[in-house]
Image (cartoon, rainbow, N blue to C red; front, side, top):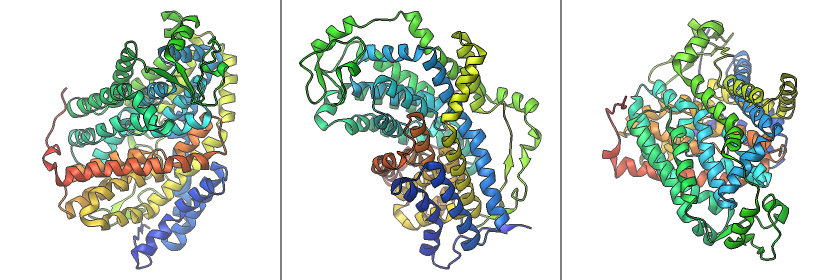
Length: 579
């Protein structure tokens, strides 16, 4: 027996939309206003979703409950495992003392907090997003910034803002692959269109990051570096997405941006170095001498910085390379794990029911039908769980951490103790991620996500702007640009065709707009607080980043609106990747 989704059970679209939004309202109200612990808030939101789905939308209780179980299981293997493994690698690096050398290598490039946030949160974070995605950049770069001396709150919030422009190509281009699969549009066209929207934000976000930390005058003091970071990443992002492929856009962009910026900083430094006002002299730099000219605003005169830099202990190139080795291994493992031939080979030998694409989820697989106008004809919703324990990205991260530890001389017994410690401090984050994925799966299988999405389609000629926010909503709900594309990619295509808009543009807008919802999705916030030891501070971080998310989302919406009505000729069709 099958059940067909209903998108207006009350006969009034606004009332149906309000009820569909209740789980999200419950989740963020508990997080932001009542400061409930995230795993409890996520569980409450998931329960609200189950009750709304079954009582209001008439979804059978067995289906709503199994949707939650399926989502929770998906979250553990597909997302939480990546984050835990990435933090494990970080913990190994800290235990061996290599993380200190990494910090000092960055501090040797610049001790200015404004420039450090560009190097670590934006450039290095983009590289990690391209390799692993799913919260790993926030976890690793956030911990890195704390090691440099950033306060935990700043480390978490700034990394959430930075982890936006690269998200559309995270985890070896997975969001773009998914978007092409669900819309049946050419991946090359979608990839190129996204690469014609987001490079604008790649220039804006670095400026936005610095402006979030300091005032306008202090931001313009480092404008040359901001432009080098943004333009080098944006140009690489545009070139690779339009002329090469969708797999390595972020990885190449992050590497190029990082290398170009480091080279630039060898020849240019700001007139004065900016630090947070409450940083003590001992926090400024290891071995740095006290000086009476530290200004209340947190500045140190450049001549004094040069003098102190000379007195700082330097590490050899070999020591620095060895310190960065764990993250180099992480990149190699994740890249190899992302190769289809390698992944398929591992799955063929280790994944149960591989030929059937996983196990059918009991009670749920093909038991729910999506209906018009979300799809052109009734379509069964599959529910398969592929227990790809070896080919999972998290396993690649875990093996990279193990190999790094062994190469650095850590015994297997100590590695086990470090891993158990990582599991213990990440336990609530794992629960929260699982419950939030459970919530997202209930909204998906009940059709409540489509109800929220359909509300945006009522905006007529302004749909290019609000359709961009549909992608934003999808990521805010699910925590993943990949999931947002899977949920709303088809709806974007159908609506675009009905409104005589270009479907390539609007489907790309779903992914491009979604990246700005990444900083407010509860999953990312939980990862950020767990990695920076701020569990319980989720509400404050959410309130801080919310307006940044909406404002940047609006900028993406205006870019899409311009393409729709002013530069329609720039929407690509019939492109082929250079092979």
